[in-house]
Length: 368
Image (tube, rainbow, N blue to C red):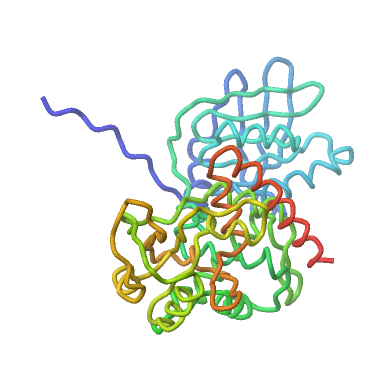
């Protein structure tokens, strides 16, 4: 017998959510919820009346298609004047609320409900009701959190803000990213629409703020946390382990002759000694865009017996972004070094925290 497939989770937009609210309402036992849509309600989309167990409380609700820190902050700000309107508190309605979302709501003192039965109703001291664990019935629009993921070219946008906290236009952000990319003779991978979408997400996450023509870094600590959370070591095939008779200076001189056709930069781990007291690996470890060409240029022979060079072939932009040139050598960005060390062993993780503190301190100083 063919196994029956479960019904797919439906992706939904705000207008669909509003229509569903009008037709089906929301359910959060043991309370009775009455939904009234009100397009003229200012920042909210209407009111939800909660009744039961002697309670009768009204919330001004706002529908959001997906979770953002900006929506949470705006709702939290509306908690403040509640003494003037004690029976109309802010409430967020989303397709689905995870346990982490509910914890954030609780810390902010904001209520929230979803279409699966999860939620938090919060009006101290008379009302505190929390329910979680129900599986999602509706799926929010595709998330844009991929902008932090190290394997996506869009991650260059949040990265650049760590070193340049102010920009006057989207074009300026793109230009700053291009300036820090190790360019090839092909068209740059990062485009203006990609930068624009990334900036919108950064603003929603309260990492940057747009004021008039200025876009400025708001929260470097959250920015770095998001980049670390989404970091993966650059994707690659089997590394080339080999031996070359060239010394370090000659290796970098040969590699320089390959630019811009071929990119080569020391890995973050190999660059750690440039920014910390941690010594690098015994062999020179490089990210390269074309391992075969580099192998030939360095006259390297494959061997696993005492190799002095390791070539990791990858086309990921993050591996090369913001590389620092010293002499002919190209060392990975201090950010890339930090991200790689944070995924290492105990000693590397300890050292990464020192580098993290320095990155944050420098970012704060640049904003001053």
